[in-house]
Amino acid sequence: AQVQGERRRDLKLIARVNGENFNAESAGRPGTPLLLRISNPRAWSPDDPFLYDLELELVDDAGNSIDKVKGYFGLRKISVEKDAAGVPRLYLNNEPLFQLGLLDQGYWPDGLYTAPTDEALIHDIATAKNMGFNLLRKHVKVEPQRWYYHCDRLGMLVWQDMPSAANNSVTSRKKFRVEMKAMLDALFNHPSVVMWVPFNEGWGQFNTDRFVVELKNWDPTRLVNNASGWTDSGFGDVMDIHSYPEPKAPSTEEAGPDRARVLGEFGGLGLNIKGHTWTGKGWGYELIQSSEGLMKAYEDLIWQLMPLNREAGLSAAVYTQLSDIEEENNGLVTYDRLLVKIDPVIVKKINAGYLTPRPDRLGSFFYKKAPVAFRTLKEGATIRYKLGE
Image (cartoon, rainbow, N blue to C red; front, side, top):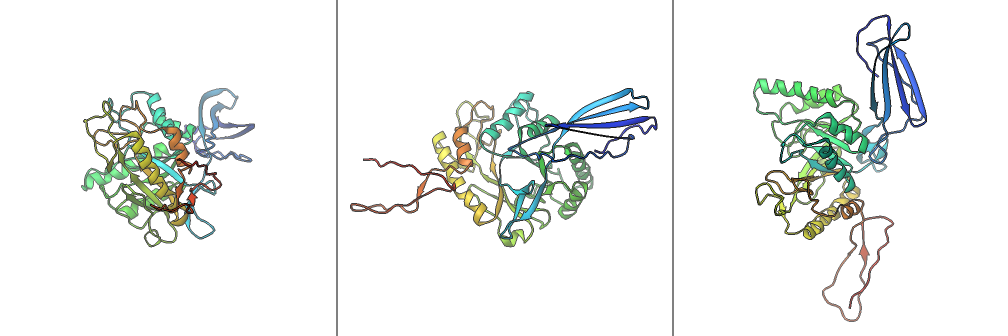
């Protein structure tokens, strides 16, 4: 633990960690690093978002308590590793994990950038979690600390975008670097944050290679996505493309031998629900007319997406988007957060690979009998069917 404070020689800083059936303590002078040894550490993950309780106490030489503060931390490792076939993939805690997420812009109809309540922040994260997503890409916005705290405790991975640069002036570029470092410092201790995204597409992009190097130097514990979509510099830990509405994967030639391949945006299926839109009719990459149609269209996209993991080395995909905003009605949730457009229980099953079985081929005409083979993408799943009259 790196701690700072008044470096008085008559004061001692004590750090205590409490976990599940585990306690550790370390002491030292203020302003010096403290080392806490944790045997058999329990790693943080979306399936097991375990957090250790941390207490720091400042005492004088007589043992009197001067000050005390409490916090928490999680232990996790995010990395790019090559699988048995030599394909670079995203790993969490030394295990491959496909990251399936939602683009989250964090807009609200009453406060725009400000959520109405803490419960509202929880609602968005929990809704995504209940639909079977393990990732939120926080899109060109930095949230208050409470949002990241809830991601930590609920188990939600975060790709953190840097808000886009305003223009290419010297002043703007200097402020961009200062504010990016401030963002990193503010969010450094959150285990949920696993990737920095300095640029979205080509928006205000400049000196990309320099920022990738700086981000890795500032924070070697996280991955860096040099630019999500469009304008790739060849640097960083991942190659990120955008594809609408159908999913695609970066090619081996584009990504190179060492970068993981990710899909930073896809989908964008729009559904206008009367009484729950900002401008009447909103926009989507493909407009759907009903909730049933949206469910079918979403399942079709996942049917296309899942083979890309196995066959094209895709390590992550981000669907656009969590909620509608002012003129974009391609969220899975309405802008007012009152309706989820498609059944979360079914979406969770779809995201887990339990997709409606499909025939390998379907003839338009046959006499008496014909062989028909059904398939699904979920290994070990049982296919049940019945014949109609």
